[in-house]
Image 1 (cartoon, helix red, strand yellow):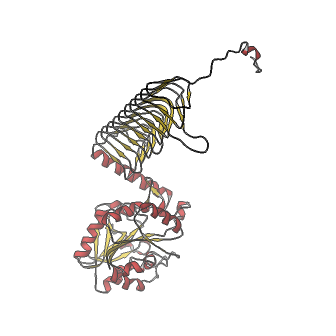
Image 2 (cartoon, rainbow, N blue to C red):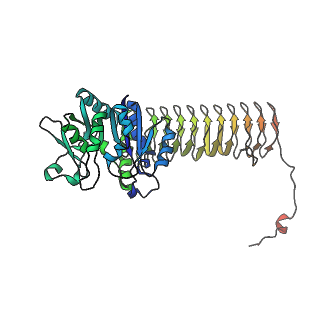
Image 3 (cartoon, rainbow, N blue to C red):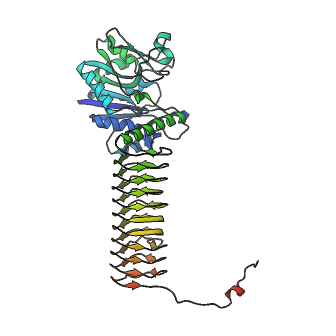
Length: 460
């Protein structure tokens, strides 16, 4: 018997989203709403997590597999309300003492609120504890009706509420702690004699109370836990709230935003103090940015780690590491697997892919470095290329410390350039170059007289 379990209701189609994805997989700051909910659930570490899915079962299962933690999945084949959805997870109820029920499309529920409700639930020996909130506008939400002792009497849905009940500001967030045995007894007694013809989980409150069990309320300090999305417009509201919340939290931690226009930062991003984030910058995934950096303008970072004092100006970086003191941009790209050493300088129109760049190396402009291991203090002239692909296989290039790669050099992998070696401008290097040597690989100059007169092209 598990002490605690969690059931996440994720069967909504989200037809108004006009998407091929189920509603819970719609993104808020690049993370599915379901992911936000599961992140909070995993913080409290229940013994079991069960997700109730609908028509998008395969897509939800595929997403859950990317998260690592194993969740059980049950399917609600017909949409008959929240009570009916929980019925599909009967086995979870039978195997746990207490169960948390959450909505998969309400992303801002937090672990602190969940734990506060569990404390009330356990200390009061409750049959059910409802997490409530007091939003600015309660329209559309079920109202919390309390008894004279302040306990929960019942929850009345908006469409079934009378005028007095609609005036109540405290609403049901759709999150509950239940005594599992009490809920198992209540579910078969739910009726669908309401305006929607559905089995409401909220009606279980009255049933549990009639059985003599206590029904309590935990009113959340965060009024935004009730926010959900049924349309793209709703989704934009969630994104705007989350974006502003994250930026404000980062400001409190010492991050500077001269202007927040166009700045979007994901929920899993960490940024050190005295770092400046400039407009039109997007930082998403598991990014870690050090102290005293300058990121932007017009930069996109995804799953990137940057040390202290890094400058990324008009840079796109994916699954890469940039060590302290590096200066990259403008108009540069770090593709997956790049590792940039300390105090490296990468200039405009430089692309680096799956390469290790040693400290104090410089590639000023118009260069492609792919599948390469580059030593420290190397200088790349303009227009250099490591040609890593022969059309079938990819090969690596190795460049030693303090090498000099002349302008417009093509290094045809697999090839090695030794320490302190150099290549002449315009060379195409196909053989290894020893340390301290100069490699020049050019064809001899051929002069064709009267070329301009013999050209077969129109003349002005």
